[in-house]
Amino acid sequence: MGLLNFTREPVPEAVSGDMHNLSQLSTQQFSELTEVLFRFLMEPKEVERFLTQLSDFATMNKISLGPLKNIVKSILLVPNGALKRNLSSEQVRADFIALGLSEEKASYFAEQWKVNSPTLTRLAVGQTLMINQLIDMEWKFGVTAGSSELEKVGSIFLQLKLVVKKGSQTENVYIELTLPQFYSFLHEMERVKAILESFS
Amino acid sequence: MAAMRDGEFAALQSLLKAPSRDAVRQLCQECFSSPPTGLGPLARRACPGLALGADEAEQLVSALHNLTRHVVYRGLTRAEDILSLFPESFHQNLKNLLTKIMLENISAWRNEAQANQVSLPRLVDMDWRVDIKTSSDSISRMAVPTCLLQLKIQEDVALCGDSPVVSALTVELSKETLDTMLEGLGRIRDQLSAVANK
Image (cartoon, rainbow over all chains, first blue to last red; front, top):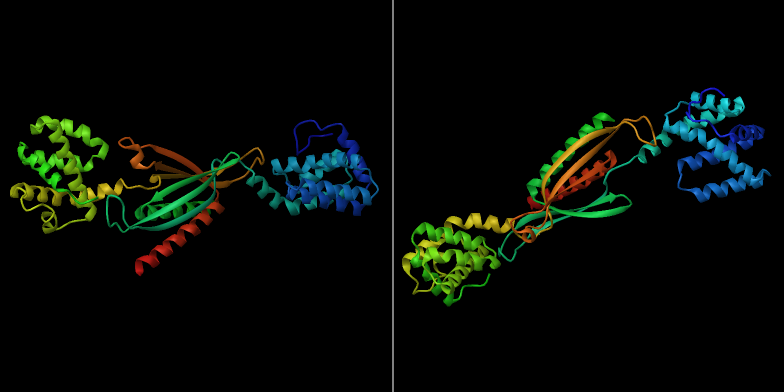
């Protein structure tokens, strides 16, 4: 096996056997299995659903679930590595062929990869580390009518509640701003938006 | 701030023993700014300068604190209004001096009261930076801009007294989050304009 694009590490022994078994599936079966796989890749949290669909596929095509799971594990190595390394569909196709999959099936999978990779890339970017991510903002503003020190006030206050994700918990931060501060804050945030847009 | 009692005005007349008008001015300032708990120590400090006994000093300081705070509370800006607070029998010149001092300071004192009022933690400063994320463990090549916003927040002034506690919170915003936030801020601005134009 030559150098692979999706990984620099040696591939587990079982993979070539799994690829061989995979090649035995009909075109129709392979296309169905690919669909199940990509659905999972698009929504990696839906593990239950994925396992159910695999089990249904196994039953309908009279394949034992155990070997099927192994095959799936081997297949998934490629798209996962491809995503990390921003591989093109040609590179994905080449890797599958190098692993022992038939040309026809490799091309089909690579085609599906091409179609789905923008969404998958966005998903991967979304999983990238964020520090103290701001997830929500609530606000209220009003007028201070009076206080214990001043009978009549009549000044405007603005209160913000920022919900910040710290690790796996959320923290609420409450702040009060004066009107000039609010306008200055708004102005700064508009500047940031313009800059972020120029980079997109 | 309740109105002054007659006994308190009597205590104020101790100011006649003050060495100078400036001394009176200074004491007025300190009595206004001091919280009720700080009046004891203030009285003790004022004693020697005013040639007063401990009790007299305490009563004076307390009365002056109440008078200045009352004037600020009511928002009295006209000389007549302040003069009318004093009883008939009060020393004329001292009354005029105190009124003059209070009129000079009322605006600064009002600002001080407002700055110290009860509030949520206040925003005191804000800084930001835009980073471009080029790589991560989930994807080795990307060019994703992101904003880091640092807010400096000061805890309630009343709780901290003289040493305000300022904490810094750094928050990361994606472009989508920023857009949503700006939508919210825009709505606030629109509502503020609507209120202002009423």
